[in-house]
Length: 210
Image 1 (cartoon, helix red, strand yellow):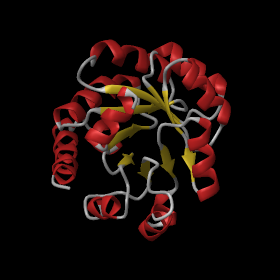
Image 2 (image 1 turned 90 degrees about the vertical axis):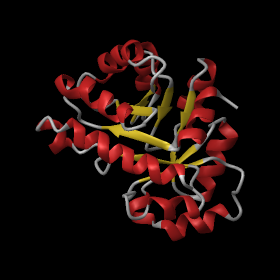
Image 3 (image 1 turned 120 degrees about the vertical axis):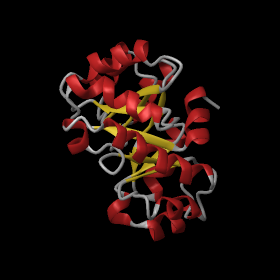
Image 4 (image 1 turned 90 degrees about the horizontal axis):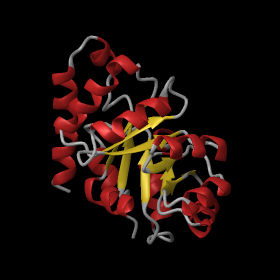
């Protein structure tokens, strides 16, 4: 098992930072870490994503694993790897990205929806798969596919909030990816980092009891 997969299965939450402004990035990351978050992904369609990943790898070394999200093709995978990303997450399944990750010792967690895509990703060498968009598919869907596909680590992404996060795990998720419900951009713009920390802590506490 890769180090990153081990961390994922241990901590169970990946914070997704999409569209974060560079000037708020470090304080946001620190706020999440203070709340107990150990895995953060900056999406590659965020302005300055590579520079932020590069900086965070030094600044938060040993405190949080930093990955790249929205890695839709090999060109973005290369950019992310050069910036120091420790894992790659995609909304789609691109077998070339998985192959690139394996060649460079990076864990790749591609976005998949159907049982066919899930198995295809697994056979191509993905350590885990991101079931997306969970907000639309619903928890019942996850429960159904879990039956026959019980040995593949699954990250449920979309629709997770404080009221239903436990249900996602009961339905078979190994981890969850969380964007705006965890990383509230309005609070960040207003400098309310204590609230970001408190929200992170609430999610972390629930997951610890599962």
